[in-house]
Length: 114
Length: 113
Image (cartoon, rainbow over all chains, first blue to last red; front, side, top):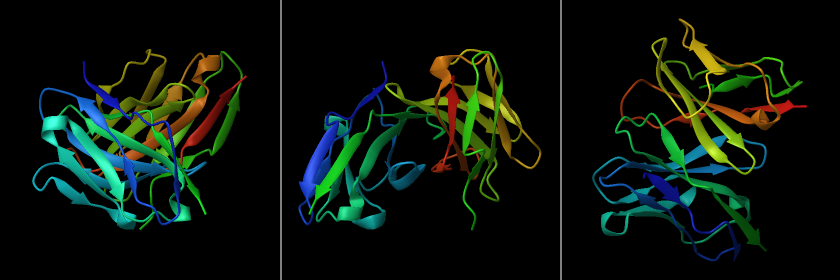
């Protein structure tokens, strides 16, 4: 069955430290991959996306993600976290090939300590 | 450029009533998507409309329905409301069918009492 897993429910990092949020999917082919961020009471903001091509994707706010086909993973990274990065992060995957029906992971809540 | 807008921001209904939620896509976008974000269930795909037609729906009962108008705005209707329908309903839009990311609105918080 097609599924998206974000193994970390909650992560706490210190401001200035590096960050990696994990995302794995279960699918026989290469899906389309997205990372979204949601601040409290807000909608979702797209951080970055992968459709094809270069497996290292750059996004907004200094985030990047790497698609690893062999590991069925699309982990999100940031070299230096800012206090304003505290939010909930969702990995989303489209298995339909039309980028129309997103399947979301359960989310990772990021807390940043000063 | 204005983003996706949704109305109302909050909606309180009683079990058994009907709720109507509205979404206006980004100008030039023809595809509209609806998602439900319920506590404990996460974000789930509800419906996809493109060019006025329903293109796909998620695993929700028929009492969840909607439509897309000629100006590409959309309505989500939930009939015979149940307590478990309480959730944040998010609307998203994209330029058209194809490989485009979805842009989300702020959501409508529906509370069923």
